[in-house]
Amino acid sequence: MRPLEGIKVVTFEHAIAAPFCTRQLADLGARVIKVERPGVGDFARGYDERVHGLASHFVWTNRSKESLTLDVKRAEALEIVHTLLADADVFVQNLAPGATQRLGLGYDALRERYPRLIVCDISGYGGDGPYRDKKAYDLLIQSESGFLSITGTPDESAKAGCSIADIAAGMYAYSNILAALIERGKTGRGRHIDVSMLESMVEWMGYPLYYAIDGQTPPQRNGAAHATIYPYGPFKAGDGKSVMLGLQNEREWKAFCDVVLRQPELAADERFASNSRRVEHRAALGALIVAAFASLSARDVVERLEAAKIANAHINDMQAVWEHAQLAARERWTQVQTPAGAVPALLPPGVTLADAPRMDAVPALGEHTDAILNELGYDATQIRALHDTGAV
Image 1 (spheres, rainbow, N blue to C red):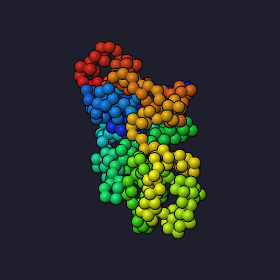
Image 2: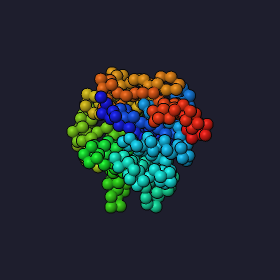
Image 3: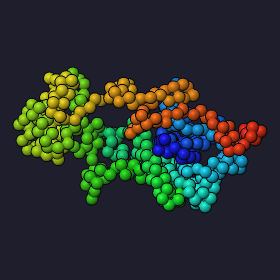
Image 4: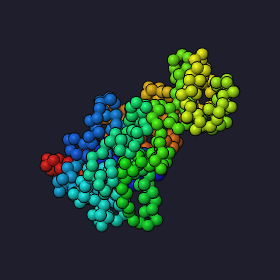
């Protein structure tokens, strides 16, 4: 039995934050019914065509779900929603601010009708406050949260290469829903969860915020190198390849000088006597490291780092990650079906093949509409009428 087997989730979702949240619930065995617009669906379906003609974002965040198309502005479609919610455990939505309230599906209305229902609203800025109605996309929240101010090079800021603000909000929604399910098991009552992308990202900005407390200088942008720990970042070897390495304490600094640089006298150099001093003199220390690596290949550098027990990593591109030896050795890849055929998928972190993880298909738009309606008691004639009127 999977942990969330028997849990029913109804979701009005699009883009990434809410779909990523509900996919985690589906991974654990929950039944997730994804309500989409007839003929259009989740607009993330059209972001690109990279996965055998399907959108990469959509394939990533929507496996193991059922797609039900409804025009929820029509009374007969809204009636179907309420029939679904009657025995649902969780309702998740990330529509435009105020949209569910206008449909009579806001938390206050749902609480009266379905007191055991857990309602999770995901938005850019939260359910109230002066920014409530402001449009919010991932990059905009990266900017608003201060993330861009500390990411990039000294000359130019840079966004994260993945949808980090959406992911943050999706994961906080997911963990709050799990907590609410546990709480409901004790109290019998549902709960309202209000997750904002801004608050999720600002929580993740805790270290740079505290580093800059009381008007102090914030961390500087240093490309792929750590802003406040040094040496910690990429360094070029003599063959032109770069090696990523990182030191965390003074014991490692001494081993780095002795075994990797083979300049033990540097460990006693006052310029580099603490992490703060090394950060202050990073230009001088960086030049010494690059000079020491100039006669070595990247492989030679890694061998010395391993001998000194200094943390290091490859700077992998996407193809190298697909082929990563560690993921292969731990059998972390499986397959999921899509409307375009089978594609590889990473097993959910923390789950093994022995757990029989749920890795069901990515649904086509409206693929489960008729089956769900039939389950709710609609006969073939009624279902055809709903199609004919555009309600589904």
